[in-house]
Length: 258
Image (cartoon, rainbow, N blue to C red; front, side, top):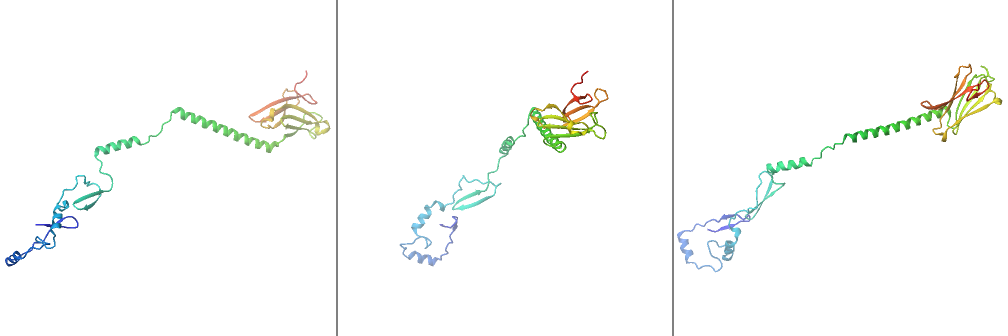
């Protein structure tokens, strides 16, 4: 019995006709048709021959290249007698492959970088030096601003009144002016406040007037002779030097004569 091929490629059995004995006799006496033969009037011999020769008419075994991966989602496509499984994703990884993949992933993970202790020590020393320089520069800037407010910027000036025994008294003390005039340290004395009797003392010179240091004068009996001597302080506390002048009764000198 022949089978008719459907659109999906699966043969389905053809319904068999039931013929009585009288009909068989009548059919046997009828001449055979030149165009149609066989049990079905709708099948042409040429078409029947082509149908038998078509390899898709027979059930064939699916291609061995098609594999099924039950662990992954798939999409099945039916074309004729061939079935194709379309997989979305990669095939399942075998346990051994999983171990190898995990090993290589662990090898590729970046390890934290370790530094030699000397490198850390060098960085710490560098930070300390930079901090010290910055702190020193800041302190110097603050001190200069304070000197500007106290002694003026140029020239640095300091003034005081003291009774030193040079034609002066408690009511008319001697007036002293200490100057840093572009690096020249000068002390001006006005005995008893009288400008006509003014005298000046050139103490020293600051090379380049570095830091523009202020100048102050103070008085103390250094040699215990009952007269106040002059102490000239140049610079700020912690970074200063002093020059001492002795009182001979009429003026200040660097050294007393015997």
